[in-house]
Image: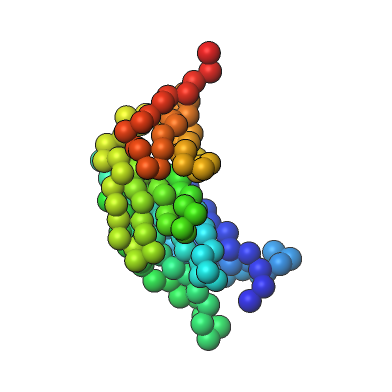
Length: 161
């Protein structure tokens, strides 16, 4: 089905995942949830979803597919905290900065905690993540954290001078 998948995140007021046709004149609601990122991996569509609000912080990765003219959503894994930003490694593993830490989720949807409690978990709200070579950059309020995929303990806080 030709068109666009569009995710919305309205914080504590919810969100949704929709399909829109190419002209934007027709749409279909696929599921409710705070949609963060959408990825296509080997022809499959995956979505990170979640919310951190007050003392709550939940998230998940789910798969979306269209079969027999119907959208289907299948949960692949529950995340320990809400995802804020996600990117893919060169091996198509999810690298997810959450409200509290940094996770890697492999192709079998097994979670590896790289950072359990990052210093950002109070008030810094990470909103982007990028891998360049072996370096990881996490953008958030006040600066960018630079670390390395194979040496997470090597961290540098980059700020404007």
